[in-house]
Length: 123
Length: 112
Image (cartoon, rainbow over all chains, first blue to last red; front, side, top):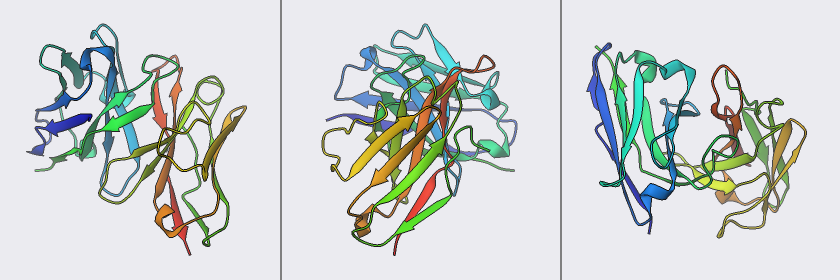
């Protein structure tokens, strides 16, 4: 059974930093593209970033470029999202998701999702 | 404002067929796969349709997807009360300014 467990969310002040983690189990983590998708309270889904199986390719939504960094450690079956210069509009539940197809032109087939971790940016 | 455009709401009565549209452009729906997700309040999204019209194992055949040009649709036939949820379309966008996955704004389906 695939398991994705996010952690690291919490309350942070504007301008602050936070690192999210996603621990994967039940599948060969190093064989899949992985993504972070977020959902602001009462709003729709927004893809944040994804990373290739070996970490050599990364893509970001424009609103987080230069502030967020996605990374992975295949030896630890873990995905990360380092967030800095946080803004109020970054407040959301952050999900990690396994992309069954992955890669440019095919990405978006999120077969498995974590339960999400809430990030609140407020003073 | 989302890159993919969905109606904010849709409704139907049990047994009816409803469709939810998703409009995009040549850089996303027009050239890449479309995916559909179902989300209940407080829960993570669930993949409903992949590669435009394919159903993952376990998804009832009441759900079907289609794509034509730069638009896609999700159809739900024989509507049931438990179908009341939010539905999102998604696709890869080849935009030169920033390729990535784009979602529709979501459609809240109400079963009357």
